[in-house]
Image 1 (cartoon, helix red, strand yellow):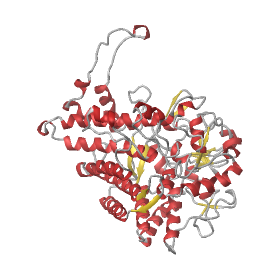
Image 2: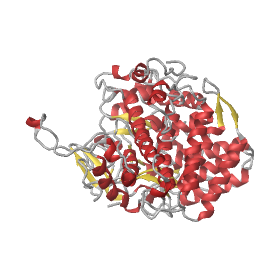
Image 3: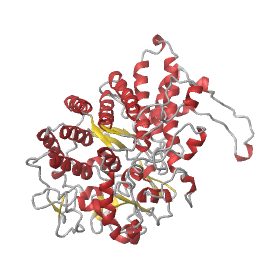
Image 4: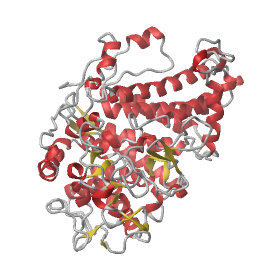
Length: 571
């Protein structure tokens, strides 16, 4: 069992409210109750910190911290899947865009506002961090000598929740431990500008990087280096400055320079490295590898009621092959075609989607077979477990029959558990891996017009991919080569953006990349124009510029604020 998970059970016990009695004794006085004052003490500070970490893993497919619904469905990398549009209609709305409304509780048959559910979970995590930070602030320094380090961990986790809210909603209320209840209740989601909100998030990560050890002895805890990585990611997003209608109006060169500097510091530490085989990033036996910069530590049989497993992926396994449910998160033809390469081993930026991938005749980047399982090819590197095509899919006539693999393990893995028909794994959810960090640096270098430095980084990623065929299907025609030179900045941008898609495909990043770059509208228009001819359910799908870059502020939150919160444009 992972070290932080062991501590998690202790931490949750320390903060829980417990009672005894069966369902017919609900009015019995609890035998043991811990009040907030009893829990919120300096002696319990590490339990409070661990309880805050735990909320990262307290997610679910209705409110996941693995962002496949909002990152892949909206980015053209995946179809919803499942048993047709009404099977979790909110996911269908994300794929189509136009049905998205501020009150998603109106969506039949679920009648659950998944947008609001995610908002509430994020702010619950923030509340845990703020409560613990208040304890630290009220404790004399000599009574809590590790106070700065614990505060740094809490601000790191808080900033992760805020980052998630920011990329989904743009304008959010900032609530921290210094605010009174009156100030919290009167806070608006427009008290701070777009850039000022990024500054707040960056300040939390910066504090963490300044006050945490370079490495932690307990796996799963934040370090100075993981904080620097998140700071670099925050500054990269912030560098693409937007107006109030979400148009990118400037790319801040100073922010990009700091991204380069931070990633260089991370590289020079020697703590992280690319795995020698791409496959190792998606197998439980290699989790917490040198490529894992920060991950949600998943676990089963850990003393909690349902385990802290991969609930966000509980719907995503195929309908056969040893699973049986539920066929969500189906890779698109567009994504699969993006892995095709030419005779030169390079992507075809303009023509990749003109024809469907043919395994018998098309050269392909080997990362395809690490990312997508398809008919006749092995699932999770098992030559005796071949994907069965339509028999593995739930609604192949609507969504096709591909299966995404990165978030799933082999059906016989010791890491597998079940809750009813849903397969749950102890496979970690990696929020940042080292390849992603390196590609941030390459992106910043390209925007700084330092093209050859960026090319070397991209080639480093490609070289690893070329060496990652040992576990794969020998029948595929693998061909991948490094870039020899970039003719200009535009070609370098295309290479970087393509590389991010095929390196990080189905990991939940795609849509947020498109919005950051300011190219969501044209990219998704191109996607819909072709994909709807292959998948007719997309006939009415439509991305509206200056609206759909962000989700609406949940209507329930506007109502609860008494109208203080303002809705995003277009909703």
